[in-house]
Length: 217
Image 1: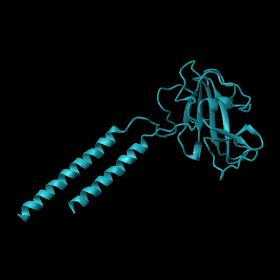
Image 2 (image 1 turned 30 degrees about the horizontal axis):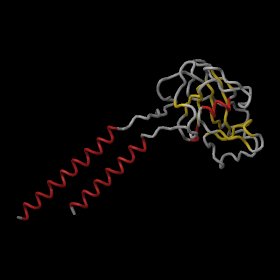
Image 3 (image 1 turned 120 degrees about the vertical axis):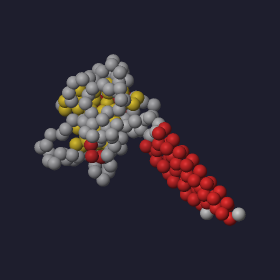
Image 4 (image 1 turned 180 degrees about the vertical axis):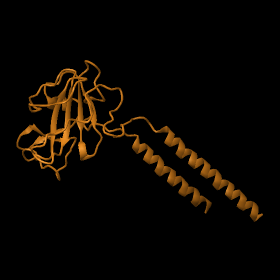
């Protein structure tokens, strides 16, 4: 019975520990070996911001080193996966990091007028401006920002909104509209808390066992 109690306690601690470790994994791009997480240093490339809107993930900020030739190249050089439509190829960005899914957009031709990726530019420290040119031909501003925001306007006449992450270099992960920042810091406090629970619980089980043995003598 005592062993069973301790086993249940250990199992609960393991579940908590697994949750801690899962929470420690930061959001990242899906193309390995390209770009870096976070903002580009001054003169170190073009910063790419992807705001998934109501699709779920936190905004993604990556650095495309050097001087990417086009907006599509900036996405790819930053390590961000982009897929075009079947009819127009990368002239139309249909999915970024696999979103939206096929239940929202088939990617057969032009995206829906009420569910699509809007494309933006900005100089560092400036303001987002909607691109008047497609990402396959637009040339990013050296040292500037490239922005993508998933738009769901109520009608085709509604204007899309820019990425919620401002085009300003920061040293930490972005926070926008109340969203929690993405952090790669290991949760030592939670891990130590789980360890303390196991130690205290084990001590309590041991003390209870000794009291039972004494009463039985």
